[in-house]
Image (cartoon, rainbow, N blue to C red; front, side, top):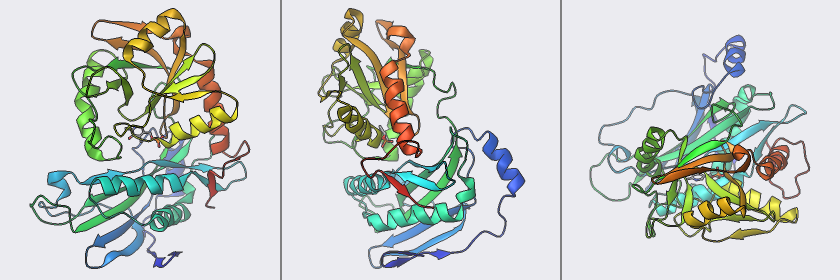
Length: 364
Ligand SMILES: *Cc1c(COP(=O)(O)O)cnc(C)c1O
């Protein structure tokens, strides 16, 4: 199959999972533990550019112990979902936005940017060969995980001269174990996620590695997730470890922190802003202090808060705990606006509502 000037060589696995075993796995896949039969790989070298795009059996990747990514963490990734449509087809939601962000993450990490047509071509190829793994229950989807790492065998500190792009896929149901239950947050004042000039806006594995100690601290305080403050003043709300945040005010308008370089530009965030504005709801992108959130909730000015990202879509925030105390959002965090925006977005993603923005791309 061709992705523009590129042709993927396709070698189907000789040992696909049986239909019976696949249905058993799809009945309760959890999140990120079950994988499809195939993967896509594309290589890059300074001399050859991008070459050898292939679809083959999913299998371990042998690696020399001096491979650069193992030492200096030059690695980026993406995450998006393929959905089963009511008529049995398969669609993607805004994959061009993921392709663009993947390029931007690559540039920030001094990596070779993958041409967007190759990124999109890889998604189509994997879905074509593994389409039977796209769940057809209304809560399920096929989570696609494109990633790329420095593949040069060399211990020097410099941008790698070789990269490996890989795409794998995992059928999923709901991201958080409790389903649509509101999440509790721990406001970290011992750790930050991203500093001005740092890598906060790039989707790189290193950001997640740096967030895990904070996430562990959240768990010690009985919270589901950590929420980070800005690194400079420890005052402004930024985002969760892997989700952006919105506040709903009493008059119905939304507020979300601005993309200032330390926040990951979420595609869910951007979609919510567009949909909310289209429905006549005002959306402000402006700094929000933790103090504004706390006192605004107490006074009744802020009535809901929710987190958003591809994996969990929109999740209401319930209890917020911090070093000196805690508070809980009204109605234990069961937000009406969050639920309604979630339905609007999911209905478009799943082909149950009209897509007025050209966001949905049919692949099968
Ligand atoms: C991926 C990610 C998000 C959400 O982005 P979406 O495009 O909406 O999935 C938010 N924050 C961080 C840190 C992320 O890595």
